[in-house]
Image (cartoon, one colour):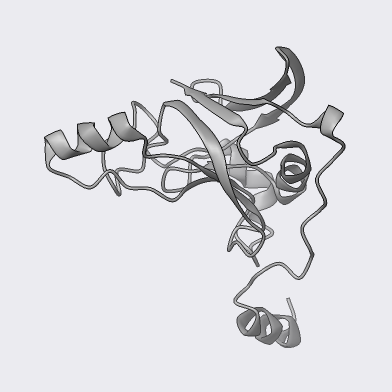
Length: 168
């Protein structure tokens, strides 16, 4: 990386200079994002038919369901994509609607904050070395990570409101 590229990265906050891809045709969009934490796989389905699969990295402590802010766990359960961030620090990101009502109640019972800001996202901006390493190690704080090329594809195939089911 040249000095000019580093300075440009700081000026834009290491955000990707690329624009977000457009949504794909409605017939190509998914209605279900399924994640198997054990297999480290994310699958896209439409009307029950598997469309695509991706390898993923999870939170740094992926076993069991997320209970509290900062525990490094990826939540388990049924959620939805409730927002899209084209100016993410992780290329692009799709927000998962964690915490749900039950998650908040569980955390309240423990007397801890439930956490939030869980996303399906790309790699850290300005850190291309993660491209080959990301799916071999759980390195994030509770999100679900794919490569930049994969999040661009997911961005175009996963509409806001799509159901997300995260299995142990």
